[in-house]
Image 1: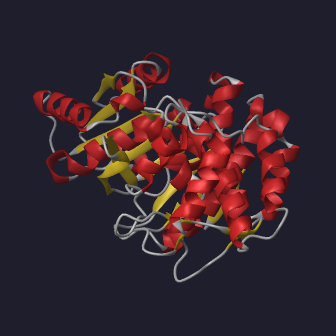
Image 2: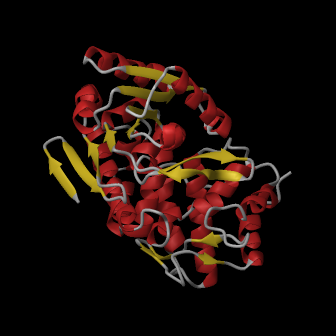
Image 3: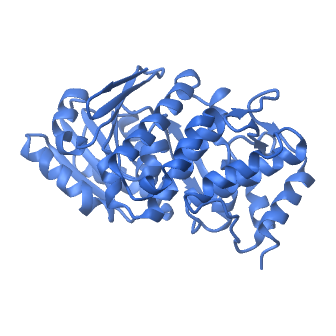
Length: 375
């Protein structure tokens, strides 16, 4: 359900633990203390951010919260995917325990996807679970990762393989925060918006490409529109399948190859670049199998190119390195990877479920052709 008002949108996401609101509102961060008090009252608030976003957004939000009478404390960790680990989860949890925080604590995740995943996992496990508020500051987090309740960390075997479903009590999004990002960072999140259009809304995909310049420039109105529409699309899916037992699998389009390439690069490859390349490869895979309509990949590449995305990267070890991580994908069954394939732009092809196995030689050929053999 989506409700719009002057200057904002409100999307409701259903979950087993109760519905939660996603607010998309320019200027929302300026009134965050009041929103926290009204939406998620707590005795103490543990703001978790990284050491890049912390000084930019975390410290001012904590200061404003304290000025409003909230007991707020900021915890930070080193920025980057390399910090999304069990070790860093342990450090943050121990710091909160040392600060004598109890079960009446609310965790507030301020940052991008790494912060949201890690802080969410802390909230899911701290004293067996405390409320979580997502305050995304990157477009990746605004458009995608802050909604849906997935939390977790990376391990040696692959990305996001240890975690928990822990729906937030609220998600508060301020599109003005996108102005603090550069165009390359904005493009990372817009890859997920393209994914939403590719799997669910052909018209949305077309409009994204039409407004690419404004979105890359951080235009607030364009950003608010894209974030609200992506949240609406994702909310509808996760409300119907919170635990990824069926329909929610479609949100992994591009991620089977994408996560494998990320892991093979040692997480030096950025998430949006990886997912964009993964979508291209998985669309090519669908066309090669006769599942995806001819010409779909070309349309997808055109949309991605408007944001400077879609090229398949080279990583050390090439296709062989990426193949080694495919069996650890969350959708894999008996060590065999599964792929979400399009029927056409805006529509996913369903087999026995929303993902399917593909012959290994076909997968290997697609990766080798796309990535090369490495060195």
